[in-house]
Length: 532
Image (cartoon, rainbow, N blue to C red; front, top):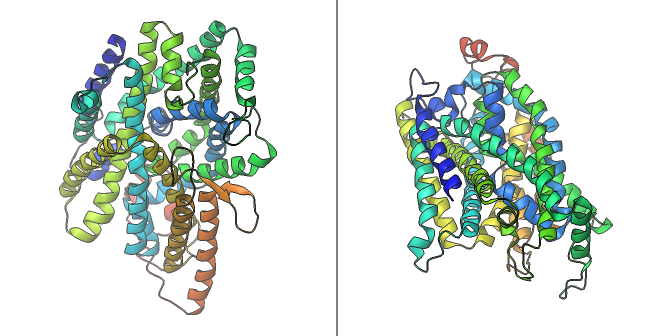
């Protein structure tokens, strides 16, 4: 507990001091508070994106999935490997055009590219909607650590959740004062702790458990047992033929969705140059190696018997319990601090990204078009507080399963913005109304299909895979919805072009997508509107 609290105090102080780190000439601009002044170099961006994408929930959920189902839980490893070559193709283009035109959010780009306020606000609201349960899950990650620490066991609801309130209060305060600089600075501590804990865990814990041979034997024995309700094995060490479509579509769909999330884009746009983005896409897979090692903790938790034979054991507690059982108490404190800080960094970035979307694409676009940069920054700070309050209320009022289900839905929803965003970076062929119709079809199909899935834990939204229409295999709903979305957008674009429907004004020019450095981009005046 002492070690955990010391680390927590350290990052809290760093969060507030971050306001003085790389101090801005004019702190009243949204890109200063919300993008760290677009000034982060390769190392800071690497730590920021790592802190952003590999969260406390990753630390808890990936091994929990392996603990519960076996090989299927490893889908997170290929998806983070596939993601970086894919985004290497388009993120540098997004950085360049955003730097030339001063875009702060992906929805800003959609507004400028297609000349459509409606499409822009739809992308913004989808981003906010998908981010909220993700922030809630970071708080679930902190809660899992606090549960194992034995904090908050009182019957009084306020005392029970007091540690969570305190963690939330600190997070809200330093994000408000320091903006994106706070999680960027804290990410150094978070990532260093995570690497140390994982490396120690994959060497030390198997030594205590009798080696990796025993770990895999224990896991294979557990997964070979039959589920009394279904009569099938509870899991598998290798994905069987019936699960391969699910595994592949889930990995590919998740890879497409990863950099559609507003917090991922925020980390990229905070980079100081196009080359910084490209270098980071080349070195980010180092985190995927760590993720593979992290997933093995699920097998170790089985071998260590963390469930104590409880058939209703909450697999989300498997990793914190494994650390508490296996490590000396002082290092357990270090490991818990890695998870706790691993929640604070992404929660801060996510709330800033959601606040940027609300400020630029709802408040300024529809409520107060004449807002000054200082007004934008003030509203974004308040919006980031409201987003965190919403996430906290979500965790306290709804059960954890609802948060997990909604985060799975969030991936499905955010994937539906990919057609407008990624296609727009390469071509202006798609019609804005067709993209809007495609988004509606993808969102409705995906949400409705997910609503119809049940599981032992929940009546609705009980999974993320269903039968693929026309193929008959079980696959990821989000990817099926994305394909439908793309198909509708293509067909309607052909129809609308034949009818000569009004296109909307494109304010970008081809050269904008290749601007190399920040200086070059800032020196160039924004291009006049054209409909190329």
